[in-house]
Image 1 (cartoon, rainbow, N blue to C red):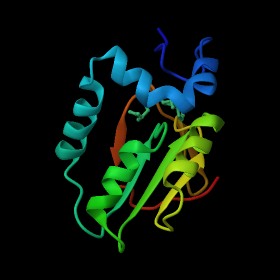
Image 2 (cartoon, rainbow, N blue to C red):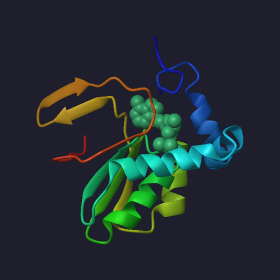
Image 3 (cartoon, rainbow, N blue to C red):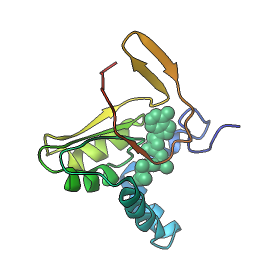
Image 4 (cartoon, protein in one colour):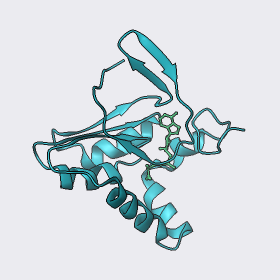
Length: 136
Ligand SMILES: C[S@@+](CC[C@H](N)C(=O)[O-])C[C@H]1O[C@@H](n2cnc3c(N)ncnc32)[C@H](O)[C@@H]1O
C-alpha cells in the first residue's frame, strides 16, 4: 500500500499547493507538536560540526536550516524534495547560505556510479550522512 505522503500517490498535488503554508498548517494541526517532533529528530540524528548531511524529503527546508546551524560553515547540508514549490520555498527562506543547497529530486531513485536502484519511501522525515553525492 502506498503512503499518502509519498509523491507518486494520487494526492501528490497537495504538496505543490500548500508549500508556503506547510509549516504553519502542520503546527496548527498538531497543536505545535510537529516542530517539537522535528527538533527531537535533529537531536536524535546528532549532527556534528563540519559534517555533510543529506535531508531527504526536505519540504520547506526548516529542518535542513536547523542542521546547518550545528554543522556550521565548514559543514554542508543538502535538502532534496520532489515538489518544485517546496524547493522554491526552501530556497527563498534558507537559500542564502552557500553550504545549504536544495535540489529537486525523487529520493526513491538512488544512483551510485552506473548503478541505479529504487528505494521505498513514505515521504517522511529522513536525514542521512552520505558517503558521496552525485547529481543525476
Ligand atoms: C511529510 S513532508 C516532510 C517535509 C519536511 N521533512 C518536514 O518535516 O517539514 C513530505 C515531503 O516529502 C516530499 N516527498 C514525498 N515523496 C518524495 C519523493 N519520492 N522524493 C522526494 N521528496 C518526496 C514531499 O514533496 C513533501 O515535501
